[in-house]
Length: 492
Image (cartoon, rainbow, N blue to C red):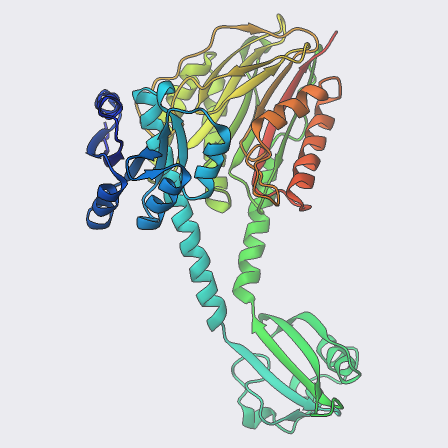
């Protein structure tokens, strides 16, 4: 068994009773140890943040020396790397969104929390903060690399003869003394006027700007050629620049190959079951996705329906998704109980997952004979959209996979689908899409969209939902991985 993690918590709260209750809640948690330091003013809290190290900040917005969103702004400015969870007595969605926009990672209503909810919120906030820090670090590293990438520059006259000063021609290896005074045809060892680099320079000499990809001496080059003009604007030759993008092309080829492999793992067709209309999709934000869905044949003509979401997206989460798919398919052949399948899959994953990475997953066992299903969920909700338009939430029955090896996942009681009902299981990419004004698409809008179209074919519902999200975001491509399964119960 892995040792329980320890987290150092700073609580800024001016209510003695609320502070005592929060400490009691965290003291009851068995999955982690929380060392709570309590102060009752923002000034004292900021002093502690600037002189000590904390894993998370629990922050009341109404303090003797600060009130409202300004409290969150000041705390975040004082310690931008410490994740903030806002605690308030008001269930106000607008305040929650404002808090997130100024740096908070979560927003919890005091009267609706217990030890498990608070502990889960802390773990998730820490994970989100670390993910954001990783993204910022990678973005900064990419900026530095892009500013220092070597570029090769050359100029020619109107006869396409290399002129001084020019750096190495196309790629390192030919010094200036080798190329100055030579024509492009001589440098490229060709007499073909339609050879792409020659044709590009000829067009540039006529006033065009030309970009092309070019293979030269086993390397991939991105080449751009412009007209070279004198002080009065007359074209006197051409100027070209090339970047060696061989490594980028190789990585892109590998990602494309990984994408093809991953796409082969997703179901190509949905099960054809009398009385049901089923569809599932993965819309990937990159070449590969961390989202996952599957239809798994089970005993007694039942079928396993799976939707999962690995933290992050890209190649690493995609590989983890493939591993999870293999686990679930192997387990489902012998185990009919959804909760036990997740129990075993969790033990496998906990041994393989990197620190701070986890998987949310919804697993349902559908019995077409009586139109019923059971489910188990690892931090992932599903929904029943009734034929009346009412929405029922299928809440999580356990923590995300990979966090704690000995987590137990309960299986739900059987539920029956009536004709006109929809079982809908999405990942959070739909609801967390941001519009131009930074307002979320929202879960409420997703569910209303499904309810309004519950008489349409399942595949059409998903396609139109994706198009509506992209329209809301204002971009043709999905902003994040978006995955869902729709199971419509229809008259036989």
